Image (cartoon, rainbow, N blue to C red):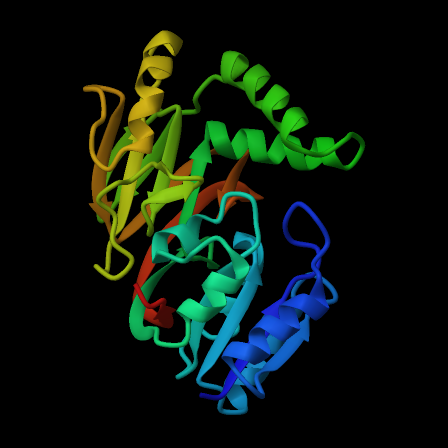
Amino acid sequence: MKIRFILNPVSGNRPADTEHFARCIQLSFPGADMRLTKSAGHATELAREAAANGFEVVVAIGGDGTINETARGLIGTHTALAVVPRGSGNGLARELGMPLDFEQAVVSLQRGTIGLCDVGRANGELFLNVAGVGLEAEIAWKFMKHGKSGARGKWPYFKLGAQTVFSYKPSVFDADIDGQKTQLSPLTLVFANGRQYGSNFKIAPRANLGDGLLDMVAVNNVAKWKLALALPGFFTDGWRPLGVTATTQVKRVTLTREGKFPYHIDGEPRQADGKLEIAVEPHALKILFPER
């Protein structure tokens, strides 16, 4: 198999031991090509180059951001994406059933199988797992701004998130959902290709990466105590308290409201100027599922 590994050396909680990783890769895939990313967008360039040179598989080693960048270079090609997790949440890797241990993950790719995966688009930009507006997008946007001047890490994110939960007021959106017009004002509105954000937090337990649809999950603006009671249910495969969430399968959604508002793609914050267009592209990406 002609295979390229793309490693983001700054993903994860500690610097990558690139020599150790290279040895593990060569044991399972002798002669494999391994490249390190040097800047934002570099993974896309490396993936696109690999596809043009006839590589069968490109493996993204990193978090959801690195995986997203790598996939952008492979859309519409004959080259499959594989992932080896090295992020914090590892949403897509968990969705694919990847081991979280590096060595086990690489070995699991030896007898993996290639299948087809849908991708989503948010204002034209690709997402593989989840995109959304509302509370979590607001937190991600504030944290990005906070990170430019303050300390980063789990505690500042948690503190900022707790503050935002109690102060956040949902926006009212005019929505066109597959041609049906309505208004929405959820606490959070998620467009899920996969089932979870990461860390086994399953926002859309019935979502399927290859069904040609996105699961639109509205988390309703219920009382905070009800949200707290509902929280454990999001770590299960099915149970949800009545009235907390509503799920609709969709192909195309347009959200509009006055002014700018934040949204996120695979956890990365963005800002829309009055309009957010969400769409699914069925079977747009080949993906290598690990041996199970």
